[in-house]
Length: 221
Image (cartoon, rainbow, N blue to C red):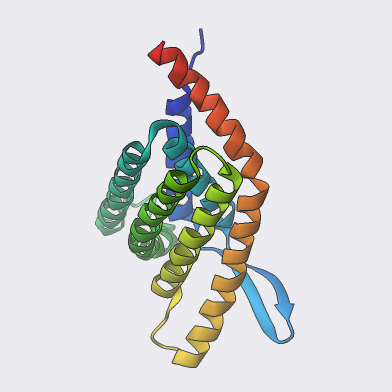
């Protein structure tokens, strides 16, 4: 019989979002212009709100310490990605692979920088998300999950977005002004879109808490 524990599935989804955003988040795509100001976003924008929502679900059902343990585990995953990317790009290629080695090394060297930027931003934002959500839970109890979920996400995502974009996309062969214009053009839409997606995912936070809570109650009983 094909049976999966709910918490295991949630942790697997969380890990997938972490790994996919690390390996594939280097691609940015054009959104739209506000006057002459061009707004862009990373493809990882579709994954990050899921990460924060899963955080809040686990805090709500299992408590702050369990969520912090998950964050620490995910940081280890990011470090492992960085180490393995360094090993993989350093090893000499076989003759059959030599034609694509340059592209491979370019992609995963970019991933190393993104992983380092993400490690810093993720560390700050995830623990901040858990802290804010926990403090709001102490104040409101189990009420206003929609408010606690979104406010903690908005604050944490702004810290995550700003830190990550500066570390990942600042280039030293461009002027400070040009860098700031481009990076702000990433931060603003990226954060606003993540906030919008967080709001859209609010029903899933309620469903997730109810869904995961049933399994915990059945185990405890």
